Amino acid sequence: MHGLRTFKLETKDLDAAKRFYERALGKPPYFDQPFYVGFDVDGFEIGITPEESPRGAGQTTTYLAADDVDAEMKRWIELGASEHEPASDVGDGIRVGAVLDPFGNAVGFIRNPHFSPRLVSASADDVSAREIVHEVLVPIARERAWALWSTGEGLTRWLVDDAKVELRPGGAYEIYFVGSAPEGSRGSEGCRVLAFVRGRMLSFTWNAPPTLAKTRHEHTWVVIELVDEGEGTRVRVTHTGWPTSGLRDEPQWEETFVYFDRAWRRVLEQLASYAETGTKPA
Image 1: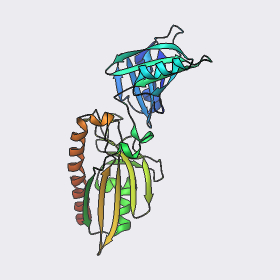
Image 2 (image 1 turned 180 degrees about the vertical axis):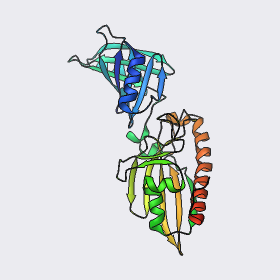
Image 3 (image 1 turned 120 degrees about the vertical axis):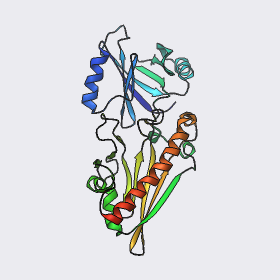
Image 4 (image 1 turned 135 degrees about the vertical axis):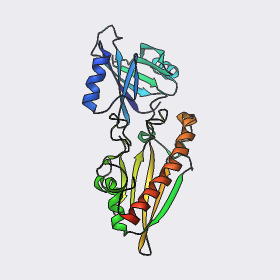
């Protein structure tokens, strides 16, 4: 059993509820099926289902992530809880169930292979030693290179047309590679600043592009390092946080790794071109 994962709502009108929460949360659902709509809210989930409970719509249940829903329910029942919602597959590999504790409170358990935000509870054993590393020497001062990475304005000078950067731990680090795409599909939406040393290092969470749907809603992380070298700056990108087990067995992880190995090389080529010419590459 892991931490709190999902807050489930029931509704008589799933489409209307989906539209409401899209507006309220400012993003589309990461999972959208007739039986379940899920929203990723900074590593936690709001899940909406058609009305199921005999108590009627408007009911909520908080779910704990569990590797084995049936075993966890059995353990709780042996401790004095009672079955509330039988463990069942609800579709696409999602399994849920719930108990009532001895005091009448509903506690749910969920195994959802589509939603596993490792940054909530990742340990050293969850992360492999694998990493992507690329670097380039650019003919600009380190402080200027820092501004190009650490501000939205800076990123729009050389990389994209729009970006959102809040330079504080937990602040947004969102680069909109496809600004015309629907919200949630424009780029690194939902990514956050992890840490920084002004002028020298910036670290942020990172996600796969929408085309890699199986890994899109997991987060790895990136470290940008800037070092003086001669009259220029050596820029090193290290993309790490690659998973080792569980969802990590998903074949699309290898495709994601290959994608970013190429992508970060292209990004640094674009940075070098801008540093040489002062104009954003086409």
